[in-house]
Amino acid sequence: MFLRPLTIGLAAALLLGGCASNTTQPAQYSGFLGDYSQLQPAQSASGAPVMRWVSPELDLQRYRSVVVEKPLFHPAPQPSAQVSQQTLDAIAVYLQQAMQRELAGRLRIVNQPDQDSLVLRSAISAVNLSVEGLKVYEVIPIALVAAAASTAAGTRDLNTEIYIELEAIDGRTSQPMARVVRKGHGLQLENDSTQLRLADIKPVLDSWAKDARTFNP
Image (tube, rainbow, N blue to C red; front, side):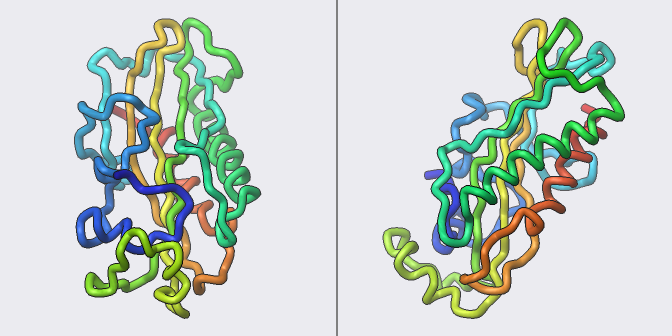
């Protein structure tokens, strides 16, 4: 069972290992990448833990341009009172623009791949809100999460998490060159009635974009 998207996560995160992990767990993979079998623990350029696979044939020196596709949501998003469709759309647009901005210092940004292009395709697989300091004994049965979420959350802060799966593809051969699965932590929300905003997630998206620019296999 992978993390269902855009839910107020209570039992889900805890049942997948008892405590929060800094990396996306296999049970949380969305299926966007298709093949996760070769992913290994690694660190991003900024030192953040990720799950990553890099093709032995990847040679960044041969690429002169990059296509940054707009991130998808996979599975399809389920907006809520706290995570609106407008916010989701803004997150996807901002992440694409941030990656284009950062990569422009390294590669030429193009809309269509050519012989020397790298294509970056990505999916946001979950935007999750979880109660700060939730203890194991407070785990709610998974079937009751939606109904009991507001009661359990009370006035405690909510942690924000966003999950992404990214694939770099050779524009000439269409062969995958790298795959990365990671998650990031945004700003805390004051309580379970506070709406998630793009600004709450921006620091994560900016760090991902900078890591893409400085990536060195």
